[in-house]
Length: 240
Length: 267
Image (cartoon, rainbow over all chains, first blue to last red; front, side, top):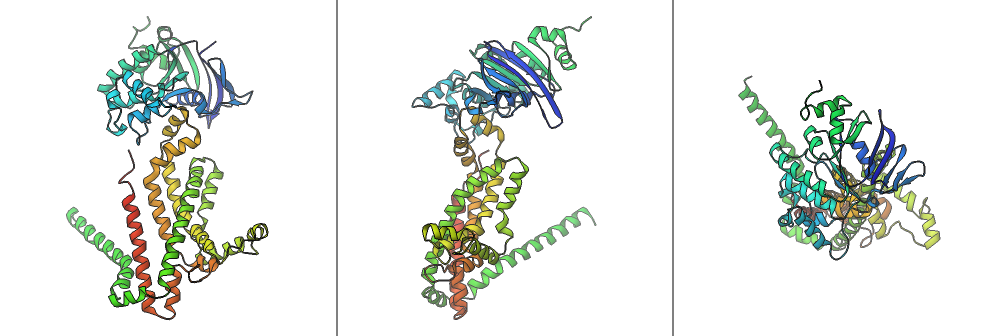
């Protein structure tokens, strides 16, 4: 049984896409590509915010979308943790209430606090997002997404909202966290450094298609497209 | 012309024009207040039309505010979420009362909900109720003319919400109703209060549609605006007193509403 399997196709205006992705178990898959490659389309389709014309998406072997069978599980029932690009923390709620948003039951506050503590931001529980730094916001957003124990974690350009200095620290933190999770995660990015460091597996998306995928090292070595070659160039010596 | 002279000319012209226009907007209010002596005001307040009309205005405008904010918020949310061309058309439809002259609005209400009206005759045959010339008709007229102001403000506020906030909430298991109640609504409160204030002001001052659909019956359908109109025929000073009270009440209510409004939307 695969952790996540997706074959979708469709078009958004003049942009046509046909994306296939597969994850067999826990670990982080980086979905990288230049701007306009279709990364957000793939991410929104997994989340259920966009309905592809054809194909299907399975989470843990269970279809959450199947165009042929007319299956389209709504976003709120897919069990996917989502960390948006600018984190989209609810500005009117404290960090604790943000982290508890997806939880139910009398112990929701305790579970949310525990998740904030695991991510090193327990002392910020009563603070509003507006008073937090970019790195702190990201940790709260991660705590919020992980607290309901999702089946899959999606991160959209997780470091794009950070300045250069904090980006390096947060990248190391995030890389460790994603590798230690017991669920699969997909990191969408167009940033070359993020693509090289945040996951063990890499899929390159260009012009609406996955042009190469596999473990990080082999994809970088193959240089199957101009973006992949650019991605590989600082990490590996040029081919002779 | 040098840069400094041009800047000076702009400042003088701009400020003079702004001051003149502001004076034009304030002049009728000042004329109402300043040309009335204190004893004339107190005499006007003891006019038999004053207290019933004031009570009715507060009651009906509060009822219409409740109708407009509750149903208008739900309508605005649906309109704001709609991406299709049809949704845009529906939004335009919701603004129709703004472009209708109040008397025409009153005639329309009468033809729709009157005893022989398109929908009114069903209501009468099913329940025995007739709406025209009742206090309920005043609330309907006020709701009709004031709703678009609130809906417009609410749709704009909901459209300004970051779609990623709503998507993040849904990914956390929130149903569409919970997304609305826990995210969309609280984040839009400042703009909704502003829209409600404008809508309430319009309801308090409503005249034409009320006169056509509800009539001018003391204690039942005669609001302050209608009382001013009625007393004008016999006693100009009494009409002026009622008008000053209406302006003071409306201004006081709006000031109170603005004070309740949060200073700014959360970032």
